[in-house]
Image 1: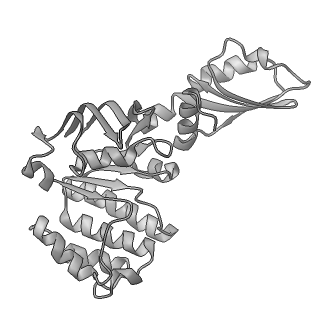
Image 2 (image 1 turned 120 degrees about the horizontal axis):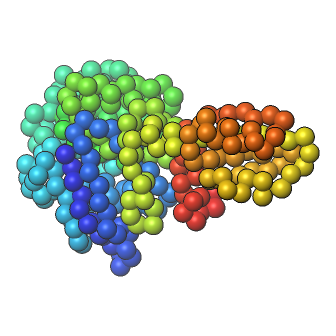
Amino acid sequence: MIEIKNLCHSLGGKLILNDINLTLPEGSIMGLVGINGAGKTTLLRLISGVYSADEGEIFCDGLPIGDEKARERLFFLPDDPYFTGHTTGKALFELYRVFYPDIDRKVFLEYMSEFKLDEKKPIRNFSKGMRRQLYIALALSVKPKYLLLDEAFDGLDPLARLSFKRAINQAAEEYGTTVIISSHSLRELEDFCDSYALIDKMTIASSGDIAERVNRYCKFQLAFFEDFSEQIFFGLPVISLEKTGRFARIVLEGKEDDMKKALEKLSPAIVEQMPMDFEEMFIREVEGRGYKV
């Protein structure tokens, strides 16, 4: 389990994260979300030990994150990992063997084959997506207890994304790997993450089970016989409302059946329920905190 307590951190004299408290249970796949500049990458670097926190504590299985045994259990894959002009996949594997003596070459080669990558070619000749696949192969061959991924889908084509998600699920099932993954692709996260944490205004604004959070909201499309005033929705738990002539699209917080009955009392010509997803929930969350989306 990873525990973050009262974490604060500044970069260049600017406060980036303030009073972060978060617990990541073992076996969880958590999506870390937030608008650009919210502090997702900074938090991942703090958890991995790349940065040392100004204030607060981070524990990995009860050990301070600075402890060598704690760091051995973590693998951090940044958005754009560093490599030299002549580095090959094979050379990179040997480099990581120094830090992770138990890294599994068989697993590495299996993923390299699946991703159709040549370990003998210089990485500089790879596209960004191919480099991402190479580092994913390295990460999974380490079989870390905790895997931290920053913008993991960036540069991957649809087939590579599918292979990547399968590989992450396989690692979680076979090795018990716990994953924190940041991404702007919220629909991708919803596909295989079981929990989330939203960073906003320098702190954890909300977190929890994705399905439970999404199910707190419901969305409807309505049509009325005549033009209407938005005031007719007064008293309902409205999260967002879009009105176009005699039509309205509304997001409410509450149980679907209860909200549908409440809307039907307004005598619309049509009440049609629409699907809610994680991306929609995220948009409504940040809108509710003062952002214009």
